[in-house]
Structure formats: C-alpha cells, structure tokens
Length: 160
Image: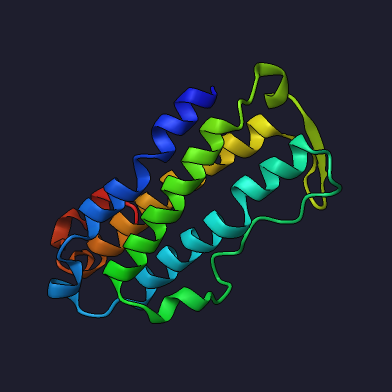
C-alpha cells in the first residue's frame, strides 16, 4: 500500500504540469487554477507528512484537512512558479516518506481526528492520493468549462 501510494503521489506534479502546459497562453490568468495549486502547496507544507509524523509519534489529535476555499499566500504567483514550488515540495515529501521506513504495522497506527474520529496512517495516505486525483479531475474540469456552452445537443450526454 505504501509503495502504491508513493508511485501515485510522485506522478501528480508531472500530470498537473502536462495538463497546464501552455494554459496561461490560451486562457490567460486563471484564479481558480492558481487557488487549486496554492491549496496543493499548502497541503504539502502543513497536512500530509506532518499528520503522518503526528500519528507515528503519537502526538495528540489531528486537525481537519485544509479547506480548498481557504485563501493561501501562494495564489498571487504565476502558474509556472506555483507548479515549480509544488513539484519541489512534493519531491522533498516523497523523499522523506521513503526514508521514514513505514512498516505494515505503522500503517495501522491510529490517532484521534478532531472531527472524523479514529484514523490510521493508511487512511491518511489513501486520502492524500485520492485528494491529488480529485484536484487533477478538478483542473481538467476547469479546462473544459469554456466548451460547456458550445456542446449544443450533446450537453444532455454529460454531467456538468
């Protein structure tokens, strides 16, 4: 489970970079895309690895996961700068995650989350991967928005 998580997590920055390559040239400044990237950056800094460390070190309650609607200091930067920042932070976190030597027993370690109750390291890792995938899908949906009004009769074939 750990190796599968790392395999997926280390690919997210590249996938996002491919999705957004040239986006500013076509779409111009896209605040929503910058908010998503800012959110991912803050997650790298404050959410995933710090909470895994807290569980492994049995250090108290775990607080809520970052809210995408919260304002982040990164959103005033350009897409390329945000992508580079996210990529660097993710590389550092993957390096640390690999070196934590997390065992199968460690994956089962639990902590009390302030709103969710008992969670495990495995729950948190799975949430990290799923969180990435959700935001990749969200970025793809943002890219599709300009086309939604032009679908004509095919609009009924898709969910918006």
